[in-house]
Length: 474
Image (cartoon, rainbow, N blue to C red; front, side, top):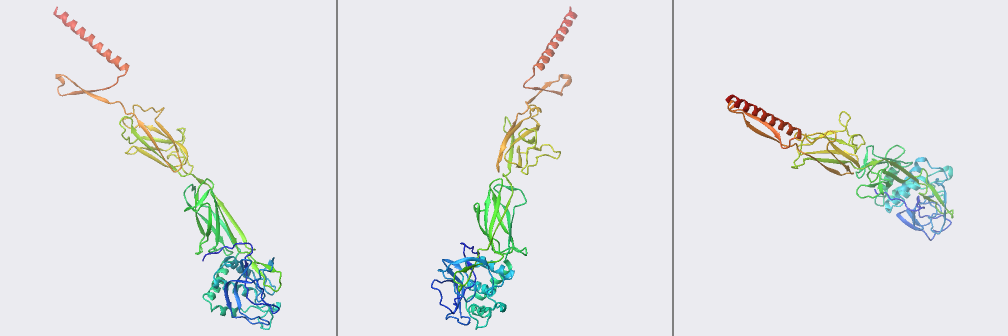
């Protein structure tokens, strides 16, 4: 069922029957609300007409009354706040009865159902205008309007003439017994870490004295640094489930300190009455005694994690380089980067994590705390790129990874200078043998000097041989 929240300061509760004391007629400014008119219960001095089981309108508000057989509430008559509700004979109501009345007033005071209104009126007067011989309250039809008790069996049979009125009596009575106060409320934040922009479940427990959940209770939710999932904004009106489970609220953090506050009306331990200026008029039982319950929970939330993706390529060809070892560090290039859980991103030995580029030359680092500056530092060169690798100043690329974003980085390597093979004939004695030498396209100065020395030394030796040959011929 839909719980109808009470509005206004004086919504009354109780049972009123359209019956007047023998001393006078009904007031002129009496207006009925929802309910049913039954055959009258007889007593001495009973005026003509049936009994009204239902609500009244008092100064525009839907109200309920107690003290069976007194005058119905007149909008021209003032009421003042009184003490707790007592029986018609002035006895204190048992705790369970008082709690049930408070619950039904909170739950059904604004009902527009004729059957529910008649059932509520019947229960209220059954519980308050019972036989109490010690107080002179009796079912004796010779009793006057001040001493006549409410004949519950008679009126229940009368309700059988109207739709579901009798069934409503049983339903409301059982619901009141199951949900009467006092209630308590608790809000629980999720245990796991919250991420800004990601919904998670907060739990609202509205419990009774036996620890069970209150079903169908209206709850006002107010959020800070958060919104309700599905565009619900920073607050709203919800209701506890009818299946006996706690209320699960999907909350999306929007800032670092999400907080959820819930407020609701709980039935009072004991309802209070409003007393009319005319002592022949029925008292009004209001919901002014209901309890205002509040509960709050809060936690912290982090920005969504980020991802770093690096592409390693050849500086000249643009082709991907696989197998390059890269160290993931913070901005200083030495200390580890931070994971989303604020732990250090390290390898098995506790040093900054080292990874290798895959076949397509890329490597990816997920689940990084944001925002933070992250660097990827080359640990060792890939094969074919050793020549220009300086271990004292290795290639490095850095950037700031933002919340929920992928930071794309690029790092290039200059390839080694090509080595060109040459073939030198080995002479007749070495027919079929090929000696292979290698040279680089760029020779160092020292190498050139050495090569020149070799050439000069060969020329000198060749001159000496020639001179010896000449001398031998002469």
